[in-house]
Image (tube, rainbow, N blue to C red; front, side, top):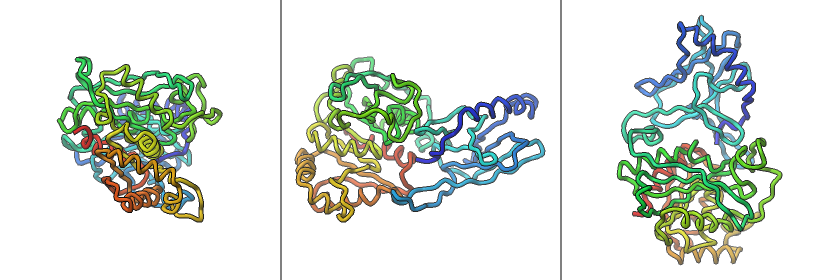
Length: 410
């Protein structure tokens, strides 16, 4: 997850209003165009800052370097310098970019800013970044992440009762085009990572656009997609429940304590969905997948309830392997935990139709996933594996959702 440095929104607002009228005056009443996506996929960024000494640009389309951190190898954002013209407009033109959704921000004399010419942005924990999409042809990643002229599903934020967590909680539910006709559908439970919430997959993940476009193309059968809030100490996304407008953090509401885990409380979600929506019942009509923490939740939920899901997807999963002994390898911890071994054995005895593991080559969770796969191999358990470039990033997770959705309920 990139660009974690918090943006001072108050300063950004001042910057925007102080410069907005001047920007419109530069081109005779026309506002500055930024970003400008060219036909060849190159992109021009512009910022009016006549008093600035140095203006830089950072984004996930730039070449990233790898750095060693206590958590492993991570990708680090780099900054490129923009050039100023005689009118005080700073600009930078990228090389040709591949179809994709990208994020970026500016740095002016050491302070980070959003692009005042671009209203499109996403929140990642407590920071914001502007976004744009490059698309070249129907079916490419840029197309899949865009809103196109296809039948659209509906998105609702619903509150449900969780007896296990002893609170009302909120989740996002996508229903496919034609849902109102009453046909029952299979259900995909799609889980976010640490720092995320029930909004993450529909903003950074573009899940709604992906599903609309894949269903319209016939590559995915129509399904309901449920995106719960995986923070069991919170009812909903920051600012959207009774705790008010607190500062979001990596572990969500820091002052609240959970009384149960996500996997323990998961049947509350399934019960609500199957009693309030037109769903096909049974294991064969349920799938679960998630990224990072959500991959860990998928891992934990399916081994706790082996007969609940027929399709399981672990995306860059934070897999708890049964202990935290620095003197033992992950494999040794797995093999020394009889309860965990029994739960995993029970899951594979239940014979899920698909157990899918995907991760980036540079992901800091690569080693734990590799050890888990070695364990599955040693036990002879069946699974599918996909490895991509890059690290612990949304660019990979959108790919994994696109591919996983085409493998389920077939």
